[in-house]
Image (cartoon, rainbow, N blue to C red; front, side):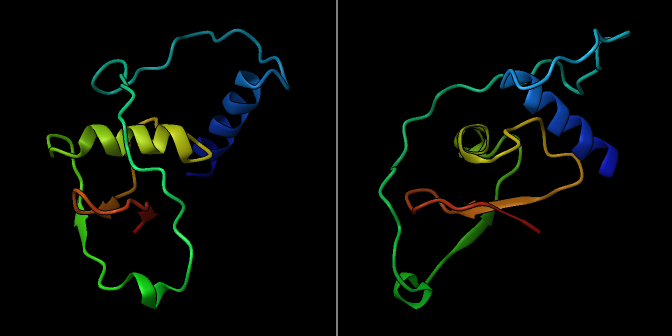
Length: 106
């Protein structure tokens, strides 16, 4: 898993123009083909306060095929520091539809 984290960091630095990587010998294989991420309108209201003020929280698992899958992918792509490159090795959860969203690895 550490080698994947290092590759992701190097690719992110290259995308930001901070480094130039040598040309790849072979293009990486992406399971399921290219990952397409469409912009999804969502609530961007700042959440501030104590956790107990936000209770009760309801969490549900979001998997491919779930009605919120597109929103989930977009939120990771837009706000997570590594973006969205698939969910290999992790299971992510976000609150049920209509609630404010947060993401955590389990």
